[in-house]
Image (cartoon, rainbow, N blue to C red; front, top):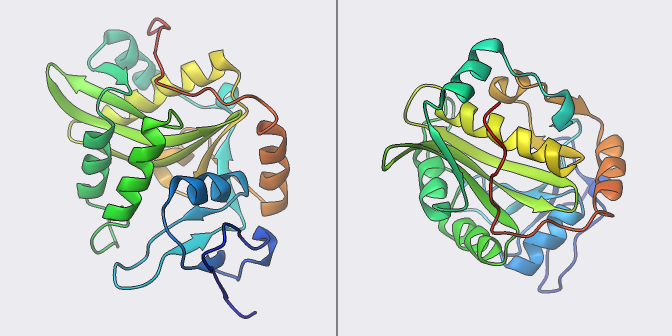
Length: 232
C-alpha cells in the first residue's frame, strides 16, 4: 500500500487503510484541530524520530479497558486509601508532560513527546480536552499521567513515576472517577505490562472504532476537571 502523505487540508485517510505497523499517514502538524480530528477518527500521533515527519497510527489490535472492569490489586487499593500521595487533577499539566518526556523507557532512545506535540496538547489542555492526573508528595510532583478526553473515551497518552507506584495510584484514582462519570473506555493504544495489570485487553481495530463511535455520542466532559470522590 502506498503511504498517504497529509496535505494542508484537515483530513485523514480511513484508519482501516493502515499498514501492517498501524501507520495511517505521514506529515501534518500538531494543531488542535488536527489532533481532535485524529482522535475522533481512531488515529493518534506518534513521532518516531525528530528528524522525520510526523507519523499517525491506528494499530490492530488496539489496547483498551472498560473502567468498571479494571483490576486494582489489594496492595494498590490500600495505598490509595492510606493517602500516601495527594492525587490532584489539572494543576500541573506542563510539568506532567515534561516528566513523561524525561522518563526512561527500555528500548527507546530519547522521547516521542516532542516540542510540537507538547505545544499541541498544551493547547488542548487550555481548551479543556487534555488533562493531567498528578501524584504529589508534599509540594513535590512525584508522578502522574496525561491524556485526552472526548465523549465517553479517555485516551491515555503517557505516565511517569519518581516514587514507587506514584503513577499507579494516580491512575487508580482516575479510574474511580471515570467509573463515576460513566466513561465507556480508556484507550491504552498499544500493549504495556503496566496497563495490562489494570485489565487492558486487545481489541481489533474494527471493535475499537465501533466502541469509539458509541463513546463519541456522549457530550465531552471538558475541563478543568475536579476530583471529589473519597479514596475508598
